[in-house]
Amino acid sequence: FTLERIREKNLLLDWVDLNEIWLQDNNTRIANTGYFGGGYTGVLYYTTMDKVTYSSDTTAAVPGAALSIARGSLAATGSSSAGYFGGGNAPGAPSYSTMDKVTYSSDTTAAVPGANLTVPRTNLAATGSSTAGYFGGGSPTSSVMDKVTYSTDTTARVPGANLSINRF
Image (cartoon, rainbow, N blue to C red; front, side, top):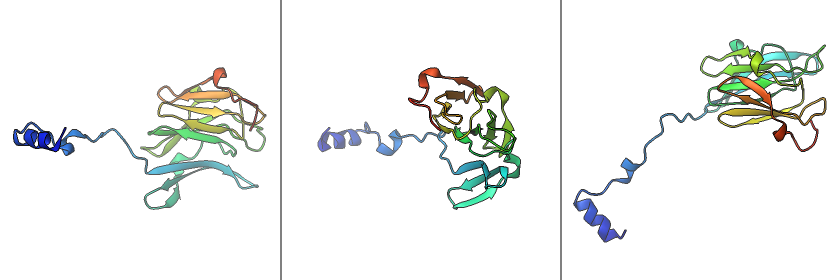
């Protein structure tokens, strides 16, 4: 288009203003909070779930969102509506397969047995997309990759996605 052609279309009311072309996606949520769960101080293991509010740079414990069991060295990932905390260790248990789900809208957490890791692990890592989370590696030294599908709260081992080497 040339400026002259745009002017013509505008005068003939055959032109659409740029502000009317771009529509806001009302389904897009911008995260305003993050969650930190569990942990180990060198003496005690915790179930504590902390919620950080990005806009105010503040953090507070959320009692209703505590993990189902006290543990440290776990991993977490999440979707736009829930977080998943998997694995970890505590005294008397070398490692766990437990998966806890924190629901952001209600600040509550519950163990989700169908989403447990396929192999108990500690010192693992996690990442995710908008539809699934991936928990990989861990101790005992492992290359195992598990995929938790958010829509069904289920976990399955994904051998094709195993890490290239065993590590934690």
